[in-house]
Length: 351
Ligand SMILES: Nc1ncnc2c1ncn2[C@@H]1O[C@H](COP(=O)(O)OP(=O)(O)OP(=O)(O)O)[C@@H](O)[C@H]1O
Ligand SMILES: [Mg+2]
Image (cartoon, rainbow, N blue to C red; front, side, top):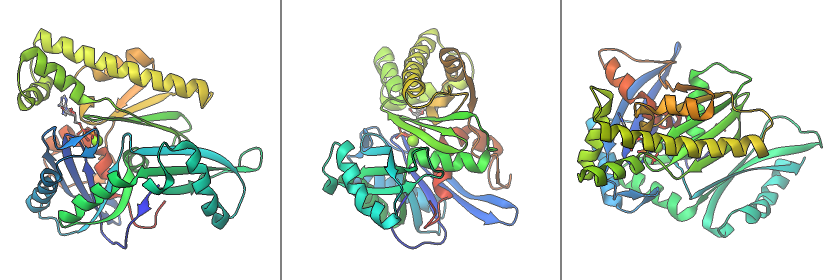
């Protein structure tokens, strides 16, 4: 699901995350996709708060420096938003022509968005298949205009041409489709970022449920800040160092509190899904996002959910040259590059 914003050929994927901006560019070759550029630029926590851009200058500078550093020539960019400003809804409607449906969508939207229809940008997609009553399932996505406009504005100010406005959860799904074999299992893609955790549950490759939970790695950073009386940068350093060497017991305890709390919230969402949306349980979980790197996360999720849990590999089906990209770097940043990779796969007109 995308909001097409203009014409384009090559596209870079630009994931404007709360903790960092991620950039990815791919090239399509006869043998598949090849990585052209990959980069990240960190932000201070005051720049984007709850996914709303509060310091546009800082974000614009960060994007511009990323473009310069990686000598990006492509100006078309696919960007995405997530969190509270997005509403995603699957509705069942009587079979009708696309034109009729276009007129029906605003009425449908009015019923479930907490904003006026004039305050949102929206798009819709008819989902494949016909259901029992001869109805069709339609996916409607609405994004708050002021939030979407700010994202478009900052990307434009950074000298790029925003041609696609996507949603994190769907960008993640696009990346998953490229890298993973089709399965008839119910698969949950979970992206645990800094301020938001995106959940997208797929059945036979089709999204049947999405939810953004407003929790993520910042919660852990804040706990480190107050426990050790350190600033944000030092707290982040402490988190990043956990993968190497022994973890001090206090830090380990905070990590466990954090992973327990987020796993609990994920469990509540998945239980809700299984009780109300779909009869089959989630059979497989694939986690991504920077916070998936917290050492005990995978085990905690496995224990809490009793489900198979794997870490994402967005580069499974993307070739790259070892001389241009250090494989260790790719492995290290891979889990948080899912959305950027998904965005870089977008082409105007695809749905
Ligand atoms: N190696 C690591 N160990 C522990 N935590 C990490 C590690 N690397 C990143 N993180 C944490 O992951 C979070 C950033 O993840 P990510 O880049 O996916 O988020 P984001 O896209 O910037 O945020 P959001 O999607 O919520 O807007 C931060 O809280 C960061 O501290
Ligand atoms: Mg993110």
